[in-house]
Image (cartoon, rainbow, N blue to C red; front, side):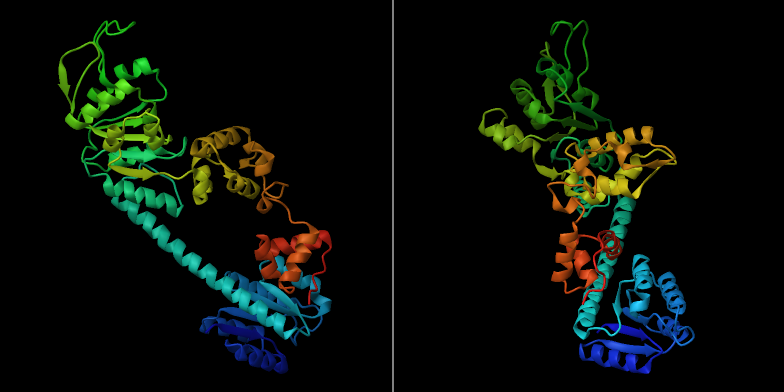
Length: 451
């Protein structure tokens, strides 16, 4: 049962509200003055406050009601407060809603609207409480993970990213090949570094090779080494990456680019630990943990005959799937703040633009955008313009995505109508805060005196 506190010096109003809300299943207590209301809040666990704007000490200006609201707001910032006001103080109530009041009702109130408003606000408050509890648990989970494992400075906030990290850390000690999949720029190499850092060979070398960055005729020499004269330009013998990674981890990025001959050699070295340099008959032996990564559809490549099926199953003993940045949006702002230079901060509009952008280039694109903005910003504050994102990514600009544009007057009036005039409910349907909706209602001249 929810607990509601009514602060009003008129006994008749207190009694009427207590009866109305009590019949709706709420626990109700009353206070006849601001001081008594604050005392009740200090004593009791209250879920919602309904307060008058005018008290006997000041029946004309509403200043005592304003002062009471500000005290409640300061001491209990998450507590929803509904204001009861006369028409003469309507503008004052609207200003307090902008300052954080949950809503206001004018006297005489409509019983059904009041009950609807109370129910919606209590549901919203409960949702917020549950979200905060979840956030606390998630934060503790992140701290616990960081205490137990070496995350190589990984910055994240999304539950999806935490699940990936937990899996990576859990399987790090198993001496089996791991395939890391995900789009370009998502951070697959960082996941490989975390696996190595928590593995049994963490004190050994970590060698990374981008199989997509080298011509196919040089890739085999890069991996397995070559003797002098093995190919044009090979003036002297060279050690390959497998030899360099002996006793540690070899990370093969973009493994789908490995040519057929290289695939066959890789399969052999994974199975036996043995290989020969190009141009040599001498068999060498290494002990290397192989991690690989790709953004390609390897099963589709197998069907086309472009990738060996037996190699795929050797590499993919365990698969770690890293989602695109757009699928873990909670990571965007923490990462952006991490990439910012010292003494710089993001403007609120820049935060919204970052969260709205699709980030097809993932973390790599985000880092580049922040690097650019850090160089262009003035006064230590990064703005939307500094980020240089496409206009469609900016909040409150027209876009094919309705969630990214400014609602029109007609849409606001329609939302209010559907919500029966309950501003909190209308704001939620439009994806706005109550304060933001009130500002837009004022901007468009929408009547705030809804019935």
